[in-house]
Length: 219
Image (cartoon, rainbow, N blue to C red; front, top):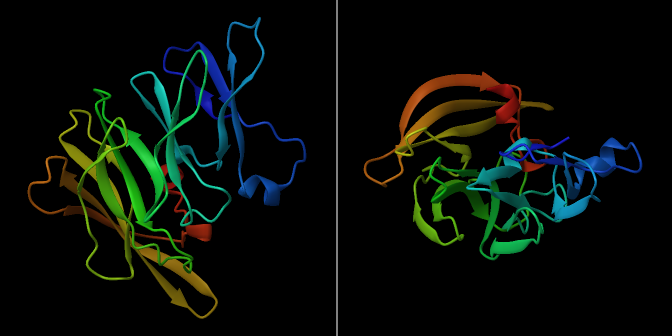
């Protein structure tokens, strides 16, 4: 189950024909069905991973980060779709950057998303930044830029008034065969003025398995 549309008229879900965690890790097509019944399910997005932070509603449209498989640092693009036709359209292609974790402002005018270089990397070496985009996918500005190569900015979210963006800055630390992450929750102005401000530090056992931190569940 992926959730409801904001107006409660549609239910979104991933169909799974074989109950395999390995297959699920590579994602499925996302389908929508009218909650009132009487209609057939419609494919809303051709391919998404089963991460809640890869889907965001924006003024009646669904914005999704779509990746070919579980390798989120490769070829992640931003797509939009929405009722009643649910026709998918790419708003930002994966070229120099691979996109994850879109989030929309309450006004529906702006998007934020995290992105890093579109390349094969090791877990914990994503080195993503947070970007502000127009709702049509055009990049307006980079809001954060981690200084060290082993830092990555993840899971951006708008404040209710749209003036601030919250994100997690993470550093994965390995010790033998185990790993964890040392993290800060940070705030940065959506206007681009000033630099990011850390507000809380914490440590997590999440080391970005297949390049995705599970912050929406953990925080």
